[in-house]
Image 1 (cartoon, rainbow, N blue to C red):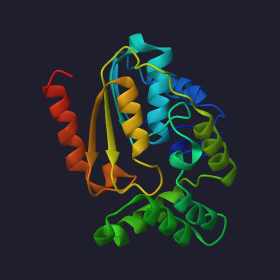
Image 2: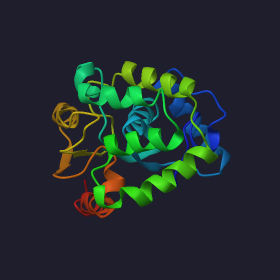
Image 3: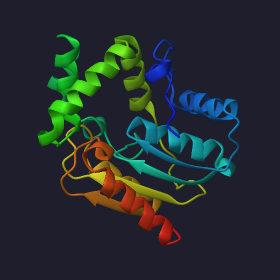
Image 4: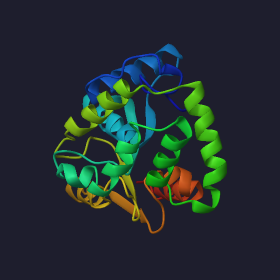
Length: 216
């Protein structure tokens, strides 16, 4: 089951919280409203992984395990690794241009699937027009992510960390440092970008399946 964070997707009219912990409470309430009781397994990408960590920290009894993809924490890495300087020009492009130009800039920044980007772009533009994320909400999300500090020790459940060697948005060493500090499983894709589930969904599924098969 996929969940939208406030300010995104079907919740684009909502205000994005200033804190990751508030986002976590929103998705917990959403699952409860759908009648789905814990325990859960969570898989989160980037800021979504921060939300998963906040959930694991505040309500560990509700979770059986977490998969964290291309995420970072202020505790383990400085800002210039958590948001690579090479990404700044592309992010500034988002302040101008039409929807197609903005989505093209995001896609080039987050994906290495050059062969399929035309079809992906058409879908992303359609999503953007259906559920537009406001600049205000995008800024609030950037601030929330920049401020977030993961706990020094791994939460009380199994954790798998996945990262992309060619991530142009977040330095993959952030995932390495997180996994090393938490002494947990780590796998790095050699050719994917920040949006790892987009670039190679089969690889992600295989890593998760092998993690389960190994009994964590």
